[in-house]
Amino acid sequence: MSLTVVTNPVPLTINVDGVARVGKTRVTLDTVATAFLEGATAEEIVEQYPSLQLSDTYLVIGYYLQNKAEVDNYLKIRQQRAAEVRQENERRFNPKGIRNRLLARLSQQELS
Image (cartoon, rainbow, N blue to C red; front, side, top):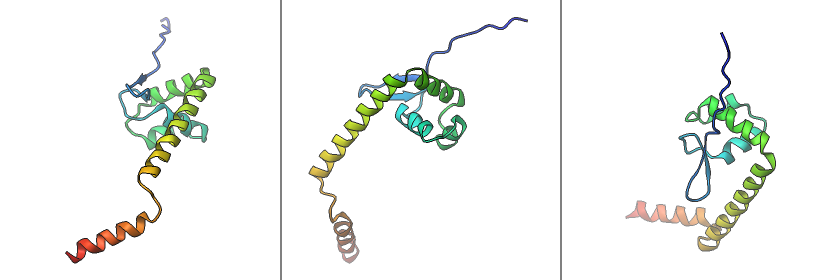
């Protein structure tokens, strides 16, 4: 019996917004890489995100380890973009006093 070595493609797809997703899930490369960097094993990541396949998670972690500089740059850009979006949303929708405004709105609805 001989062993056939097959190279499996990395299960990452890039959507129109430039976000890398794992396999056929909505789980992002950011999510898997961050969990791994925080010390989670592939099994723990799959337990937390059950839509992931364990084999896909291992392949993505392997891809990260082999392309660390490129993926770290991608993650940095994604974090910067998230900060920009958060700042824009906070500029447009001031979060200060939101709890009080929501409670006041709820009280008004209960009185109606």
